[in-house]
Each structure stands twice: as C-alpha cells, then as structure tokens.
Image (tube, rainbow, N blue to C red; front, top):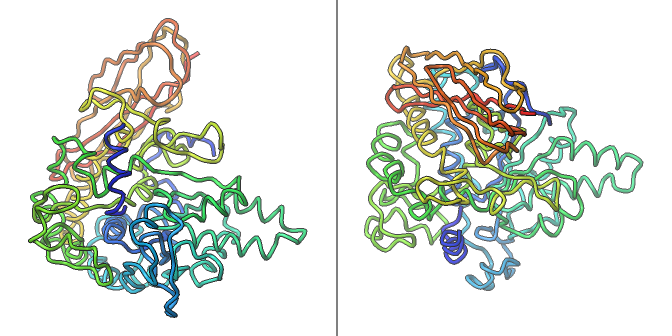
Length: 505
C-alpha cells in the first residue's frame, strides 16, 4: 500500500456460499473466479500488477480500471484546489490541484512486456489471457480527485455493465486505491433503477454477485455511500494483515524470513534475468523512477540509508500492499475462496459481529505466531509468506524457461471425503494422494489450524507419509481444520494443500 501511514502503521505494528466439497478436486477442475482490479497506480500497485500477471491464468481478469485515491489523483485540469477528506492526507498535503498522479498509461509497457513473455508462460499452464485481451479490458475510471464519484466514466460504466450482466457467478472487485469508481458504478445503477419496479430485483442481483476486497479505506466513498446505500454488499476488508507485503515489511515480517524480500533473493531469483516484465518491477536502488510521483525516491541508490522504513539494499522489496486482494483468488487447495474466515494466501478475514456482510482482520483474526510467542494480527498472512515468495520465484522462471527446466506445483488429492464426521474421542485416518508433474520428490506435512473453526478440546496427529491418524479429545466438539501441506523439492519449492474439515459431535 502506501509509503505513507507512518504513524498508523507503527501504531499497529507495535500494538499489536457454501463450502465446496474439495474431495478429489484439483486446481484444473475448478472454475476460475471473475475479477476486476481498480488501481491508483502507486509503485506498489505496479509491483502487485506485475506479480498478478504471472498468475493471470488462475482467475478471469474482466477489467483493469484506473482510479484515484487519497494519495493519487489527476486533478480536473482547471486548477481546482482540493483538500482531502481523510485526516492523514489532509494534514500531510493540505490543498492540492493534483497529487502524485502516475497517469493512465503505466499499464501499457507492462502489458507489452507481458506479451513478450506470454509464449513462455503459456508453456507452463493453460489459461493465460493474451495481452490483446487484457488491453481490451483497460478503462479509465474516476480519477480527477480523491473520492470523486459525481460523474459516469468509462471505468464506472464498465463495472456497472459487469454487475448487471447475466453471469451470476461471484464477481470480485479488487480495490487497490479508492472505492470511488466502484461507488460511481453503484450510484449509476441506483440512479437508473431506484424509482423503477425493477429496483428490488436489480439490488438483489448486485449483492448476490459482487464482493469487494479492499486494502484499507483510501477515500471516504465506501463509508459515505456504499455501506449505507448497499448495506448487503459483501466486503472483505484487509487493514492489518497486508502490512507484511507493504512498505514496513521489515517490522512485520520475522527477521528469519527477511531473506525472501532482500536483494539477493528478489534480484537474483525474480527481477534480473527473468525477462522484460519482471525487469520493470520496482525495487530499492534499482535506478527506476515513476513519472508523476515525486515521492518515489526508492530507486535512488543514494537514498538506501535514508528510507522511511529503515535501511535497505539494492533490489530489496519495496511494497506490494495490494497483492492479498488477488492472492485470495488463487486456488492452492486451501478452500478459502468462499470462506475468507478459513484463511488462505490472501490472509484470514472474520465475519463482523455487527455487520454481517463485512469480513475483516484485526483483533478478530489473531493467529499464534511462533516467532513472537504470542497472538499476532499479521500472522494469518505471514504464515504463508515463504510458500508465496518461492511460488513467485518459480513463476518468474516461467517467463524465460521451457517447461522441462522450471518447477511446477505438486498435485494433491483427498482420498475419501474432505468433510468427515466423527464422535468425540474417536480415532480416524485421513489420507491424500500426491504427485509431481516434474517428477520431484514431495514431502507431506499434516498440521492443525488451531485458530480456525469451532473445535473445543485437544487433538493429536500421528502422521506417516501421506496418511495421518487423528485422535480426538474425549469431550471435544465443533469444527476442526487439518491441513495436508505438500511441498516439492524443486528449485524454488512449490507448496499446495488439502484441507480436511472435521465435524466433531
């Protein structure tokens, strides 16, 4: 997210739909979710965008929309002065006619570079969209000012049309900047139908399909318009867990895992010698400078010791604060798509006790961190970091290597049912079948996700290879989540999972 938020981030860092039956289901058999990305184009958005393109076969990108935020807006070209509605940027910037605006063409060189690596990527997995298709779904949304939602734009009209189409699959609206372009789309729907006999049907249609995944509030349009006018619209709200992928990652990520973000790994395994797309990935000291944003000094090698979040080395990770929004959509066997409260690569978000259509992190979604020996609001995301970063490096290889020379994820299949039922005190066996497309050796580890579910009581696991014997406590009840975590031994090991959900009576 933003290289701002010093006080907010430090305060946080120091203080702190039915389930799909996954039995015998693998990634290739699951229908990829629909999604639209709205982005204000900050450098961390660019880096999230690049990583997302390497996973573009895992979901259906149906729109790429330029939008604004409290940190980035174009201005109206008339010299109109604007003061932020958000307290932090109001105090930081005061009145501005435009703010750190990166323009509406920054996607172009990235899609051009994606087009160059597309033939290689397509060797490794089916379903990568062409660059031509991706260009066809780029639109400019509401960008004049933070929170501007007074007028229809090509971007808002595009989102509106998707919300009103006849495809009733869940539709994920990723918010990497402000919610204003989405808000304008919803307002346009309201304006057109509110007074008509169709309104109730149209309202229900939108809330039945739309799901917002937001990284913080970067303008006031969700609070002021979307939530009060569309109270039944689902929102997944990530305000805490994304920090381990954002600018203050050094404070959020355990020191033993810093190597996954430092220049030796990022530079050698991802950025350099991996084709033209990853070469455009912003990192510390890389000499790159984003046009339009005078606060983007991270690439200046002379500023490495004076960075806001500490001292950094060349090619160190800067930020991808928005990546959890699409990481949630990638099916790696965690069954989290329709259950954000179950946890996955996009973090763990718990249903609000006061707003039933809101899933959020923070105090309601604490996981025990073995690194801190305490409950931690970022650990629901941190627990997956090693797997995520190694997966990223493996996909970076896909950009330049033939299939036989790169690593690919192991396959995991549940034997029997993934939703067994058992009595308290019972002993039962669970098993998976594993294989690897590259012929690599795989290791299976079974573990209990203690913070997820409603299970009360003790449980013990006795694993051998791809099987585990589960001993339930004598007075235990509730839902118990057990994972089979399968990792190969290829270069940049890749990890996939199977989740067993035991209903204990």
